Amino acid sequence: MASEPATSPGDVFINCPFDEDYRDLFQALIFVIFACGFRARSARELDDGTETRIEKLYRLIEACRYGIHDLSRTQLDPVHELPRFNMPLELGLFLGAKRWGGRKQKEKRQLILDIEPYRYERFISDLAGIDIHAHHGEPERAIVETRD
Image: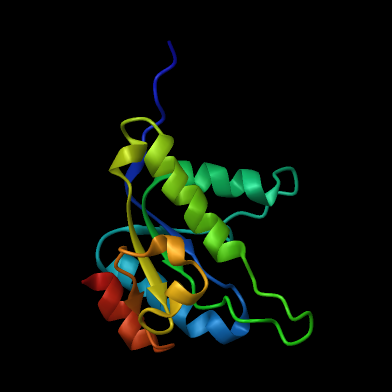
């Protein structure tokens, strides 16, 4: 029987936008993760043309005991008039790993961030009852919420 893959107790999966407008928040998250003695992991860490993006996400989520998920970019894109669903999708993968994974996956812990409190209830109401923390678009606030 194959042994269950372990999660790394020091790895934190960061699920957030990677665009220029989010750069300061992303750097703040990386800073606080390292300052607290953990290792930040994200889909940006390795560019391997032989691995699909979803496979990379599966691998990272499986490996990380902790996850930080920022849902602040769910507004409509002005060009296409569609929201970005990457962050909610990755949150769902993390929740699924915790729910249906083996013993090590059930030990997963996560922090869910958004731009304002309770905004998520308007677009992802299935998360009702889960504490989501607001960073208000401020890197300093993201540091405090993550550290705490």
